[in-house]
Every structure is written in C-alpha cells, then in structure tokens.
Length: 107
Image 1 (cartoon, rainbow, N blue to C red):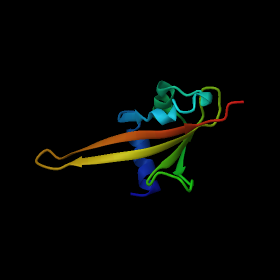
Image 2: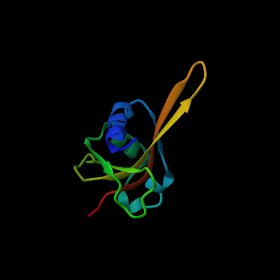
Image 3: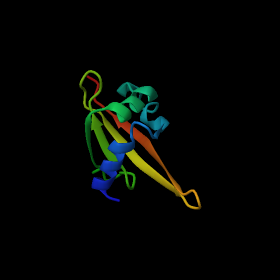
Image 4: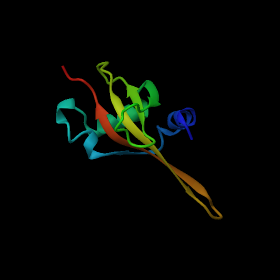
C-alpha cells in the first residue's frame, strides 16, 4: 500500500483500532510536553493531514500525521500502520497504529 491507501485506512480505523505509543514519543523528550494519553487523543480525534515522512532517518513505511493540539500548536507524530492478516477458516485482519515519535515546539 502507498500513502493514498494508508491515509484512507488510517482515517477509517483510527477511532477504533489499538494505538501503541512508544515511550520514545513522550518520555525521551519531556520538554515537548506530551503524555501518552494526549498522543492517543491526537491520533483518535486530531484534525490534520497525513503525509510521507521526508526524513533521511525515517522508519521504513512511516508517515507523519500533523494535527494541532488543544491550544493550536502544530504536532508532528511519526506513525506506522501495522496490518496483520490471520488466515484460515475465520480469516481476519488486525490493524494497529504505532506512534514512534512526537514533536512540537514549546516556546
């Protein structure tokens, strides 16, 4: 899948899927002021755009989700969409959103 398909999937499943927030996203940079709960809320309910991750150090397959926080600061969340398919008689899919990193400027 590419950006268009993943964007469509992300906005379809983000309110109901499991969201995993890596500790790096909120513990390694406490000066950015994120909590795990806020990051989950931004993924579930944030208004913003999703785009390719242009960083030369980007995690393969990651995207940037760029919502605004509750006081209108731009946040950049590095996300992965993990799709696992279980085959068999009752084949199912499990989708998780993994937040690897989170950034915002605090002034």
